[in-house]
Each structure stands twice: as C-alpha cells, then as structure tokens.
Length: 336
Image: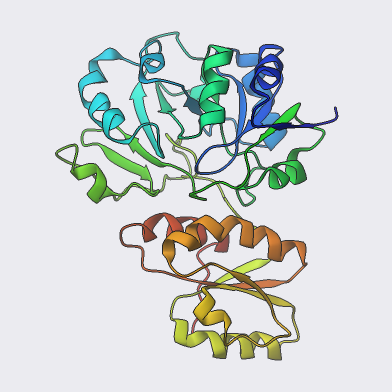
C-alpha cells in the first residue's frame, strides 16, 4: 500500500483508516506511535507484523480520557490510579493495572492479565481517539529494535508501504518514551524511566520502587522496552561518560581508520575535528533526550561505523536518557 502523509488537522481521514482496520501512525509528546483499534485482535496482530515486534511484548493502550480506561481496567485500582491521572494526564506517564476479564485481547496484553494505559499530551491524537471513539494501541512507529521516531519522516523511513497513513504534527517535544509505572505490584514500580521521575511520583503517591527495569530471559515483560534489544542503529554506539575523554576517544577511533560520528552537547562539539560527523544534543540532558533518537538516525544515515555519544548522570531526568542510550549501545562504554 502507499502510505499517506496526513496533516494534523486531517483527523477524520485518520479515524476512517482506523475504522477500516488499517494502521495509522500518530504523534505524541514523546515519540510517534503506531495506532490500531485496540479492541480488534486481528488488527492488533498487524501492528506486530508491521514492526517485526515479538508477540510477548505488550502494547500501550492510548485513551482520550480517564473515563475510557475504566471500561477496561479493574476499578479497584481507581483511587490510586486517579491520583496519578489527575497529576500527570495528559502527559508522559503510562499506568499498568489489572484489566476486567475478557475486556482486552492477549494480543494487546502480551498474554498478561494487566494492561498499560496512557493519555498522550497531543491535541491531534486526543482528537483522533475521540473521533474514532475507541482506544488505540500505540507502540513506537518504527521497525522493532531501531531508534524510536520523533519525526514523521522517521516513521515513513521504517514503515512506508506497511501502514495506511501517518498523522504528521512535526517534531515531538520530549523525545523519549513515557515513564511506565506498574500499580499491580506490591509497591508501585517504575518499569521504564521517562521524563516523570520517582521524585515527581512521590509528590502524589506514598511509595515508589524505581529499581526494576529488566526482566529475565524466561519472563514475560509487563512493559515495552524491558526485555528485547531496543533503539539500536546499524552503527555501534559507544558511550563516553567523562566529557574529558572525548578528545582521546576520537583520536583512538580515528587511528583505527574507521568512520565515526559524535553526538554531544554544543560545548563538546566545539572541540571536535571538522572531518568528523557530528550531531548536536543541545545544552543539557533535557535537550539531549529530545534529540537522542533523531541523532542516532541522522548519523546512521551517513553510514558511520561508530557513534561516540555523550553520557549523562542517570539521576532524575537523566534516568530516561541513560536507559535509552545504554540499550542503543548494548551497554558499551568507552574505557580510557
């Protein structure tokens, strides 16, 4: 099929595609998602096929209001969940809860009895869900394992001719996926870090466990991004944790006669030789998070063999950036 690029105002056209059982990529404040009718298992399976995504990797259910959640989720979790919804929705927080029996298919939940819900902070997508009238699943709109898309052209690069349309609303504002918190655990647990960190959550609820970001080989992940390789370009990413090591790292890889690119803040890039490909992460960890995936894709398009990427502290907002960068690098760090 020929993938259509829709303007952010072409909500009805996008909703019509969803109603026909087609796949439509949609914008959020984090990354672009790949949308399909969350109530139709046959269509949801098409999402896995288009992405090449493992079927035990659960999908996030995107809603246009908290009320839509309670058509599917176990209402006994409502008091705690609504504290979080009132504080952070619409926004980059995904909430995992047990669901009412038979309300969502195993294709959505990855075979679990829980599901993940999010209300994105994007006007076009909220209007799309309202117009469509049902929730939509929404994993990142990319080939599974590759850097997530923060522009419509990233989606088109990976999925053109595999999906019906892309609702284009320009660049995403945050650039890394939502925080995922699991309310079904004994203690509410962060399964994936994002721009809403544990300190933010503790202002709203009494207790948060932030130490569970991985699963074992035989365990079914409760949230996306926990088990499988993610965010990886073709090039090998090398994390440079100490900014003082960049000069030596560039010299070492240059001596190997390999092509490389450097992703770092503007201050660091001022010292990079002109013959080295570069991508600016901006001035701090917030801008670095927004630019991370676009930078990996841009340098990959230049066919570099190695990408030297600046590391940041994994405290606070740095947790999300560090989590994604470590996964893209396969935890490969430069050793001085």
